[in-house]
Length: 243
Figure 1 (tube, rainbow, N blue to C red):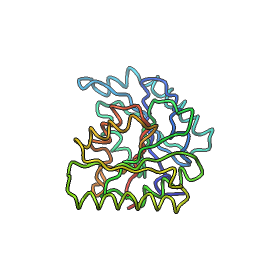
Figure 2: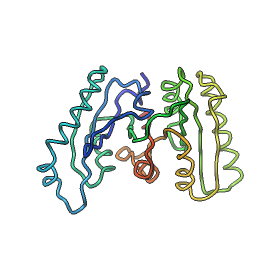
Figure 3: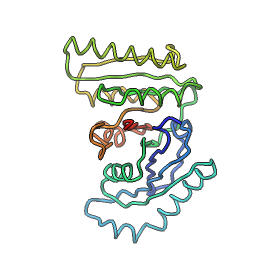
Figure 4: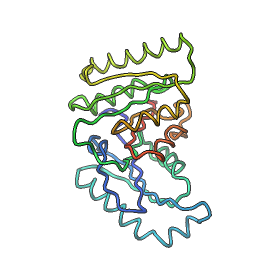
């Protein structure tokens, strides 16, 4: 088992029933999952007040999800929170349970045809961990992958270096069994990176990326991750560094 898939945190919005039918949730070979049931509350609302009002319903919905995973042979741990900062709750639980990845299930239904995933690449991410995770997930599928790097800099030397990096990643995936006809790559220096990412993501069925700050183990959510989680309905897999 690739380390990034050994223990995965899955945040579940228990303020409404969850179907969990997104592309990645059906692809991941889960063995150990931490199910974080969260109920988003307004800033002015106290968590104790929300818990008193909604705890019974939230527990019932979280248990329904837990039972589904248990029936599939997944060892699950659960936590229920009432929070006005979902991202902070995810960060906290990810670290406390020692999770190696976070899966935001998304709300989009899986495609009827071949699934297409965009893989957001940045040089300071754990590229080896990302590549081996992609192999474990998709080598025996027909899923198509799109490696994407974006930056504001138009420095020619940086552009050449990132092109070399992207070509190298595509070559390595090919060596691992994900053929080149299933992998495309692109780098962009047009516009602000976050805007470029959001404009590209709409054309894909799911997103894979590394954590925000690999050298700071207390955070997995950064600006890009937060934007993707709140402004799209795409399933999002965030892979932590392998240390």
